[in-house]
Length: 255
Image 1 (cartoon, rainbow, N blue to C red):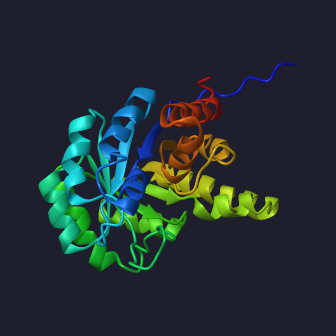
Image 2: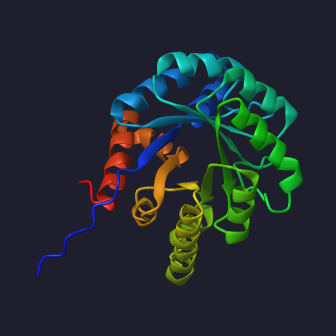
């Protein structure tokens, strides 16, 4: 008997180009140009471009916002901390989407999801003001039903589930732990979808870990950056984006 893989709706691939700017900033100057990376990612099959304007401007800088926008017709997802400075930037820039993430100056990368359940009263005004400006708001959270309930209460239309712990356990060959974390992602995705929230996922995903997450039926978008940019050093950005697009499509029964 031949098994037929279920065909799921196509999931979008958002490519985070922050680390092109990281390489540029390591030496100064203008090369490599994140705007060029955005154009290459679009040509290779990306569905969106993600950039994170951090308080310390360690990678994407203010001037990059306009050059990236001019280089692509794809929707731009602006990752941002819930601060007044970043809110002002977002309201002036008007990206297609804004993803509220936790941010600490000393961290190497985003460490875990934003605890919106604990920070409800602080975060809710940011969600409201961004939505009033016509910006699609997402909350980067742990795969927790409590966090999703809070997102619903805030009126956030999208959550992005943090996949970092699943990837870490899979990389460590902890099959039991990885399976447990994947089950948490599956449960949270189904729960959020049933509550009317669009489900995105991201953080740390690579070719080896993306398929089980992309196969979650409720997932509509995957945002991936660091691995794609690292792989691009060896095979080129075009090839790295195309391979990730293929892995997602296979998981969805689209290839």
